[in-house]
Each structure stands twice: as C-alpha cells, then as structure tokens.
Amino acid sequence: MSWAHTGPFGTLHTATEAKRHTLGDLIDHLFSEVLPQKRPSTIPTQTQHLHWWKSQLGHFLLADVTPAIVVAYRNMLTYGRANATVNRYLAVLSHTFTMAVREWQWCADNPVRKVSKVKEPRGRVRFLSDDECERLLAACQASSSTVLVRCLSMSHRVNMLCWANG
Image 1 (cartoon, rainbow, N blue to C red):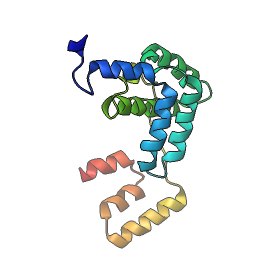
Image 2 (image 1 turned 180 degrees about the vertical axis):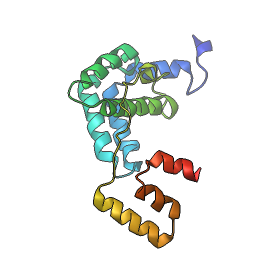
Image 3 (image 1 turned 30 degrees about the vertical axis):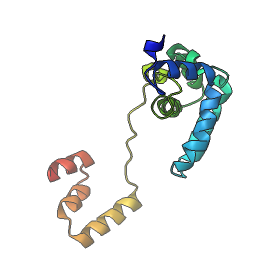
C-alpha cells in the first residue's frame, strides 16, 4: 500500500482522515476556522443550516456520508420549507465538504456535488405602486431621462424599456 501514499496529503492520508472524523467534527472545525471570516449578515443563517445538518448527520463518519444519504435528508428538508431554502441548506453542506476536501484533506470527495438541487420557481414579478411610480417619474424628470418618462407614462413594461435602451 505504500505506493498509494503520495505524501502528507496523499490518498492514504485522506482515506484515513475520512474514517477518523465525523461530519460533526467537520462542522465544528468550520465554525471555528471559516465562519468567523464570513460576512456578519450570512453567519446566522449558515449557522442555523449547519446546526441542522449536525443534528441530523453529525454522527456519520465523513467516509460514510454518501449522495444517497444526502438525498434522503434533502427530501426531509422539503417538508415545510421553500425549495430555495432547501437549496441553501445543500449549498452550506457542499461548501463544508469542499473545505474538507481542498483545505484540510479530511476526505477525498464532496458527496453533495452529486446531489441534484430542487427546482426553484422563477423570480416574482413586481409592479411599482402608484407612489413608487410617481417618485420614479419625478426622479427621471429631474435627470432628464426622456426614454424612461415616456415608457412609464405610456405604461410600457420594463423589458420593453430595456429593449429601447438596447
């Protein structure tokens, strides 16, 4: 087996680390090493997502976390949560495994990469309220943007406005 060992970060080392650490260990390491470097606005949500993964899968050895297991828990997440939220949970877990693979060599592969995201609905269409429309028109008149003023006053849609500026 010595041929498989390619140095301190080689194949044998990674396989050993994956059998030594649990997902809970990995998440704890991420909490101490990576999360403090994140934007403060993202920390609470990512912490919540990571605590959920830790409570569900934290006891698994990294070597035992498979795409099938992640899919089963992804499907659990879909009950009572929006699809976009489920995808954010997956993204946080995927990032966690990416760090384990690239930075710490705790495992050889990221099983979350092989898991499909759930389909998200298209973004919602929102129309300006009368008050917002009046304020926009006033701002446009002050800046002499005649194309926008004409389009808004004739009730053109925004995509037609983009075409006009095209």
